[in-house]
Image (cartoon, rainbow, N blue to C red; front, top):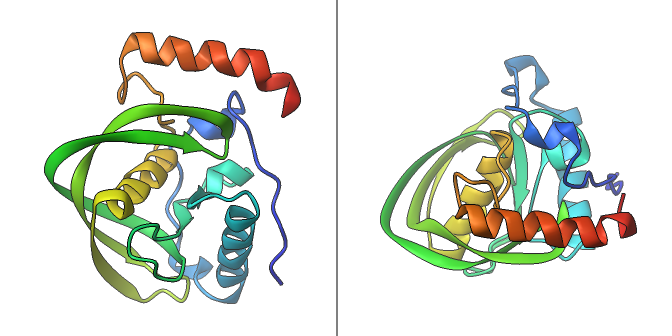
Length: 172
């Protein structure tokens, strides 16, 4: 049952909250179904990542594709990250802020430790753009958008907010 979920757009309060962890009792078929819906929604929007708060659920779960390594998408629950390598600047966008892109610095490497929807632990080491996807989606779980002042300059932050105010009416 890969139902497409309804996206939330910037200014929605759920995008600014720190998400709750997935509880042990939540792992299983319902979480798997939700994860598959996240993947379907992500693909439908031509995205490479989608976090639960972007569909109104304040839980520590996200779906991600692998633009660099071309692996099948996965669902990540309760992630922990270990970053490394130099900071690389690339353009980022977001399904919750469509058509707006900005340069964001992210570490080149990440070791991602997470739980699958069945509750089993897993670990991946990712580089470059695959790592960038992890950092972007993990930020969503902390209520941080890519244009947050913790990620970009005040000038870039203001430019993104001005651009959104001009197109917001097309989405909200």
